[in-house]
Length: 213
Ligand SMILES: Nc1ncnc2c1ncn2[C@@H]1O[C@H](COP(=O)(O)OP(=O)(O)OP(=O)(O)O)[C@@H](O)[C@H]1O
Image (tube, rainbow, N blue to C red; front, side):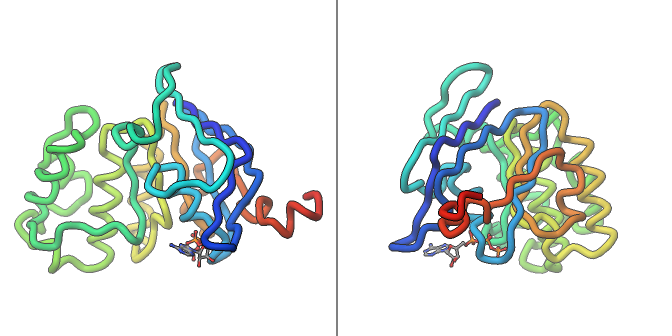
């Protein structure tokens, strides 16, 4: 998979979040989008995922050498982000079964296999609404990392995780990165230490562009 951004810009009302962004993302590489709070990391990830329209420039997707329109890109991606909600009324098992109906898991994993990999065996029949915030985050990550998808978008992936949860994230994301395109929005080193490339969103802020970078 390849994602090509050319002169990409996004503004909300009169405020430009980034402009003149030229960049190519390729499968087999993990990228970190870095920047301070409010710098536009989540905005760029939502634009890449097709959930948010850009304001100028172009974004092009290629899967196996074929151009894919933005409205079809959802079928090639999985993502996790703080604003994404789980279905609180489901038990853990029901939540995964529901997810699999839309997005199968990698390597034909079953619901039970995923529960085992997340280390949540004891909570199989617990309602998601009764999960701790760290358990919910582990579930969101497990669903994203283990979905059959070429593009994995991770926005602030270790939110609410303790040290053990962070170690779990690092182990599972690195085990599942081969041949995938991974993009992490973060400003915490342990979330993106496995990424080979870094993109600083502040380089594409209008004030910095006019200074000629
Ligand atoms: N829907 C929206 N309408 C107007 N402004 C928005 C909207 N969403 C985000 N913004 C603004 O865009 C800017 C970038 O926000 P964004 O959430 O992308 O930053 P971020 O780098 O992900 O921040 P954080 O590290 O705090 O998560 C902020 O100034 C924010 O207020």
